[in-house]
Amino acid sequence: ARTLEDPVKRLDDLAEQVAELEALRADVGSLREKDEKKTADLANLEDELARMKDDVNNPATVEALRALENQLEDILAKHDEHADRLGDLDAKHDEHADRLGDLDSKHDDHKEHITRALDDLHTKHDEHANRFGDLDNRHDDHAREMARTLEDPVKRLDDLAEQ
Figure 1 (tube, one colour):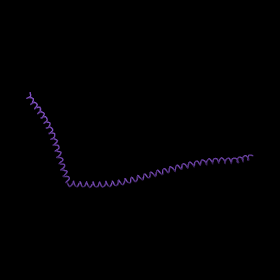
Figure 2 (tube, rainbow, N blue to C red; figure 1 turned 90 degrees about the vertical axis):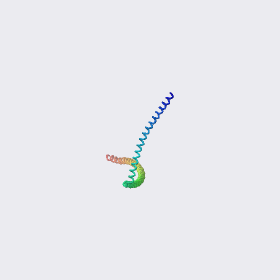
Figure 3 (cartoon, rainbow, N blue to C red; figure 1 turned 135 degrees about the vertical axis):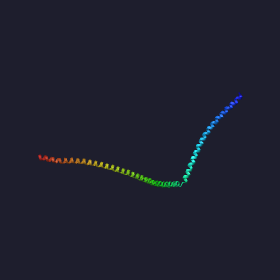
Figure 4 (cartoon, rainbow, N blue to C red; figure 1 turned 90 degrees about the horizontal axis):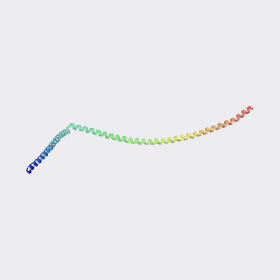
């Protein structure tokens, strides 16, 4: 039994090793596929780099890049000019805002002055109306007194005329 047991055990060990080798073979196949893909990607990148080198050394490309550089410089100069103008406009805006604040303050002062003047006029108007009312009452009193004063002699004359 011991004699048969050792070869069976060895066969089991060999079967495990074969399974491990097959798993390693599958891993190697997968790694080979990845390597082939990376190699193809590298070849594509090398081709693209060669085209870029050709483009960089191509006089037409160099001229086009110089034209783009000149356009960029013009755009940057206009940007700086616009930034300066914007700064000037911002300063004018601040100046106008200050002036508007001053005008608003003056407007409030004038409004206060006008309100006080109107209040004074209303007060004087009320005083004059009261004085006019007093004068009107005094006039009415004088008119009644005059009527009475005139009425007595006229009545006496009428009485004398009757007699």
